[in-house]
Image 1 (cartoon, rainbow over the protein chains, first blue to last red):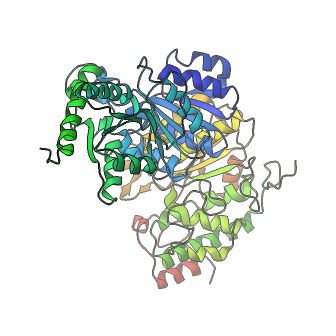
Image 2: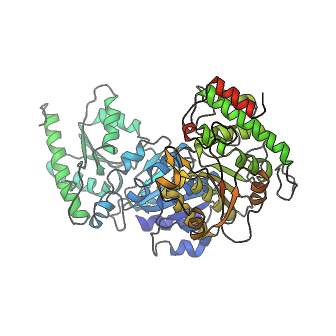
Image 3: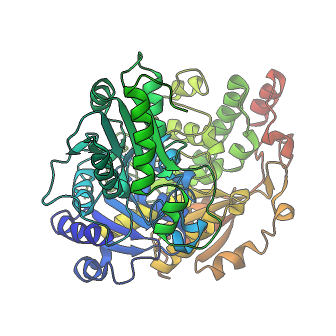
Length: 315
Length: 284
């Protein structure tokens, strides 16, 4: 995802002189071409994220389109107040890009995990949250975010994730993309879990049900039209995210659901538990630890689905 | 170039005795606003009135009739709790009607106890949480340089605000970039909310700290309008560095019974105290 981000950024910066890239002392080599071509419009802001975010606001207030980039926990939780006040309260078009979201950098330890960022930023007025599911969505998200006159947070994984689309899908911020059609079960996936959600759907096919998979690349604003359609049309709707069960996509859908009259579908939330991963291990290990594998996800969904179609109560 | 921006730095210094009279009216208004709105931070506001007056009448290229001109100098009140002093300064400088000050702190007013983002004409940014303003200013100064503009950015900080780590992040970054159109001013009244600023943290030696962080540092009597204006008109000063004015001030300045008494960080003046203050200022 980060290579797609860098490539798209160069494409956009060559036609929009307002674009300025602020990096929190990361992206070694990744931005070499950007630096070569746009020199002064690359600013290594050092390991000083609070200052970087406030500066981005100051630049946006003076007509530039700053894109601030560093590792997810450091550009979200560390400088949350700067995002809240300097970016959201001022409602300026700054794009905040977090790389290594969720468990992407699991091996670096819990300091580098980010399973709270969606929840924290979702609470901020004026903020839009986009979590691309593959490299195509990364490029389209960045393109779309630059058309916004408001703050946008883009939540990236790392590099080398599976590619979901053969070509650029229709991408509109705030509108989910149906990646795979189905009935009975609908998976709402956000961010880097999209390939896993598709694998989970394959598992479910083997159990005899063809599940729909939606890329909910935008967590805020929530695609309420799509919510209404899937909760009235399916038996089980499952959110899937590499983020805490608290406050993320699942939390957002649950909040929406709480305000609706009774719906046909039941909601299942798949995400990380309310605890830190306190041992060594890469992303695959961390996903297993939190039950974010296609098999475990498919099993949980299957149990709820069986209970719902038989009219029984799930345990 | 005639774009309506006044206080051209090549122009003449305003008449200091007239400006001193304006600062007395601003101080009287700030005390009155605290009294009427029952709003705290009076001592902090009075502390920086002369700095604000020197900037707005003596140094900043601004056009009160067109406060959003892209070429204007920017002023950021990083110590947002002195909002009443900023509002009164802007009103007397012509950015909005003086009568608007009577709405300060009222329900629905654009004049909040800490400045909101662009709600009141002339207010550049929202502040109130300390340690944001310098970074915002550095971003503006960088944007100016990238866009080939010559505007300058002033940011007024409190000495207590230097407790915030983000101030020093901004200090290092501005120096690293050689942002010589950035001017920071510290209202060094030696008090913060609940005690002496140099006792709560090791603030001293403040000048050497900023010099060590790569800034061109000047110290000045923060109540000497002429000296403040002279230094503010030096930006950029030829050093290639961002500039720091350490303005030695007295909290509660101008009202004898408030001067250097930190109770006035939170205390609200009653009617009698308001009257005494106005008499002292020659307004009654």
